[in-house]
Length: 156
Image (cartoon, rainbow, N blue to C red; front, side):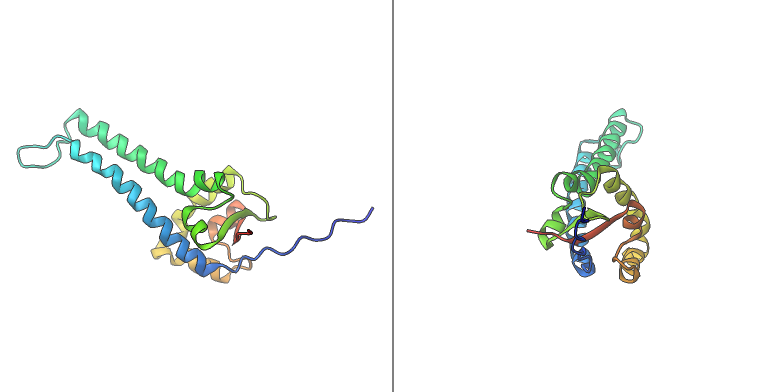
C-alpha cells in the first residue's frame, strides 16, 4: 500500500507578525485587566483617602479583581485560541495561528503550557522570546518548544 504524500511544510517564518500580534493582544489584556481595577472605586477609604485594607469589602474586591485578571489573561491566551482555530484576537488581525508541531489543532493543554511560559519569554521586555524565535529552526519561543507548538500563517 503506498504511503501518504508528505504534507506541505508549515510556514513558521512569521516572527514580525508575532511581534505585532503580541502588541495587539497585550493591549486587549491591559484594557480587560484595567476594567477589573475600576472595581476598586467601590472600596471604602480612610479619612486620609487611602483604601481601607482593614475592610472586608477591600479584600472581597481585591479577590474579585485578581480572579478577573487571571480569567481575562487565560481567556485571551488560551480559551479564545482554543475556540477560534488557534487564533488570539491579535493573531486573527495579522493572519497567523497557533498549531501543534504536526500542523494540527493545538490542544488546551498545549495552549495552557505556552501561556504559562510567557513569563520566561517576556523577560527583558520580551527580548528572550524574540531572540529565541529568531534563532530557532521553526521560529519558536520557549513556550512553543515546551508545548510542542508552532505559530504559522493561517490558511483561508
